[in-house]
Image 1 (cartoon, rainbow, N blue to C red):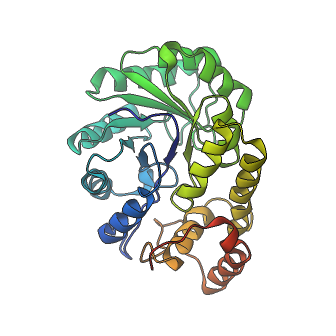
Image 2 (image 1 turned 90 degrees about the horizontal axis):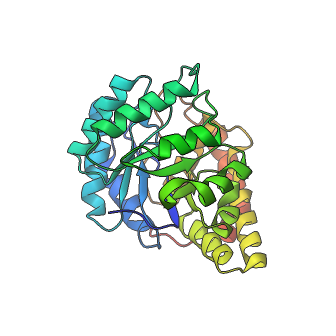
Length: 304
């Protein structure tokens, strides 16, 4: 199943206190999210803390997500890792879980010396995968920045069918949307650029999508329909949620988003994988204070 252009949330990973997958919370969250017009789910990515999960928990995340989704939308699974063999191990895990596609960055942690290293990684994944492969351009998490020519070469590989683009060069993203071979679907991963991506025919894989699936869909559809004023206001509402993180970014980002989802009755804990910060009571109070100022503006009703 291939995702249509639209909004694909990057799923947070609900965890128990011992960092095992909180399956009831995962089911509650996914079923709520899929009440909106989403085009897929992206699991185990950056906001999903996939690289920090133990292998058995990553496998459980893939298996349980596929089971809960039950064919309603495509499931894309992150297999990013620190080396090609580890990526291929994760590929085997994702295929065994029957996900619809796999997504990988260049090698995590270590900077590639040349674009050729990234190409060789993608070549190996494409050759060994029995399901579609997506490339994830994310220079924030991998010290690599691809040129258009390197992206074009990667996307021309057999079985490479999509691009998640989280670099800040929107001109490059727009060129990818318009010029990559085979009209490969291109999804922008930057939260403030959902509106811009929709206007040029790209999709959005949003790291804030677990918290705001409906609002992400609304801004995307308004922009695609040419309702510029409405789209701009909706995009402004999404950006307003950054107040929750107090400008801290990682590692505050997953814990704060989980705290909001917990407060809204969708998951049971705000546990993130160590050594990411666990919110102190004082930090939880500050998140609550920021949330109260914007809650009625940006959040859809949720079951409690």
